[in-house]
Structures are given as C-alpha cells and as structure tokens.
Image (cartoon, rainbow, N blue to C red; front, side, top):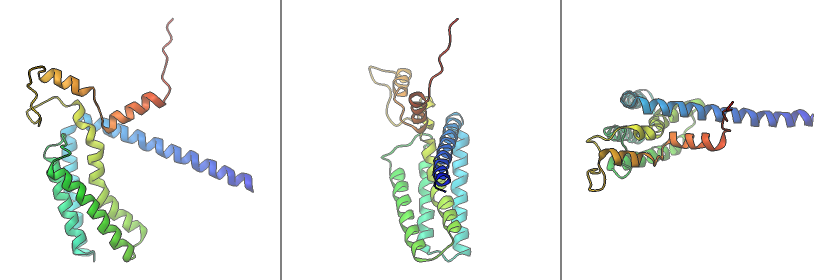
Length: 201
C-alpha cells in the first residue's frame, strides 16, 4: 500500500512538471507572436478590454455585486485603454500605467473582501477573477517584450539625436539590453536546456 502511495506522489510531481513546461512553451510562443504582430495584438487587447467592460455591465444588470466593485472595475479598464494608446511602448512612470497598476490592486482587494463575505461557488469566483481581473493585465504582461524588435519612430519619448549617436546606432545599442518575457525565456532556454553540437565530418 505504501508503494502505490509513493508512486502517486512521483506521478503528481511529473504531471506538474509537464504542466509547467507546457505553460512555458505556450507563453514563449505567444510572446513571439506578439513581437511579430504588434498591431493585431493591440486590436486584440482593445477588444478584450471592451468585452471586459461589457461583462461588468452584465454583472451590474443581472447580479447583486456591489456598485463599488463594478465601478472600480470599469475605471480599471479605462486606465487599460489609456495605457494601450502608446502600445507597444510602456512608460512605467506614466500616470495611466501607475493608475492601472493601482486599480488592479484595488480591484483584487475589493473582490477578495466581497467574495470572502458572500458565498459563491468556486467556479463562479474563478470565472470573475479570470475574465474581469486577470485577462487584460496578463495580456499586457505577455506583451511587455513586444517593443524589443520595433524600429525607432517618432513615438520615442527620449530624443535620439545626440552628438555621439544617431537613430540606428542608438537602436542597436539599446537592442542588446532586453528585459522582456521573451528574453527571459530565451535566457532560460540557452542556460537550462542542453545545446546541440553539430558534428563536423
């Protein structure tokens, strides 16, 4: 009996490892797609924001959720629309970005406070958190690396024409410093996974 119990724990560890690898591979693929199709990604995120606003409208009409939870959620989606104006560039010190982060925290606080005091089935609570609180911020998180391969344009916030560098040299010097999700996965792939050695005959 103890041997089968031990095998069950080994099986759970293997299953969790496969799930983690699958999620990492999926995120890597999505990050590559976002880098290639930034305009389409912007449209998809805008549609997701509008769908989330419609979900909040449905919750207001058909459910007994508190008005503060719904109003705060709609304001959060408006701040997401303001952050989307400069997509794929994100200014972490801009007022819309700071407001979006603040409203994500406030939304989670209000949701935890409400759902801990009023009983709802777990599937409904998970649906609310997934569709209303996590979907759009997750899309922004995955698309943080989208501006790494974008050529410099007039939308750059910093002036690029200094005495020591022009637009092209500044772009290639900045390109070597990558901090996005895709660069993290590339680093993990190069450092963890074994490399193929080509045989020379």
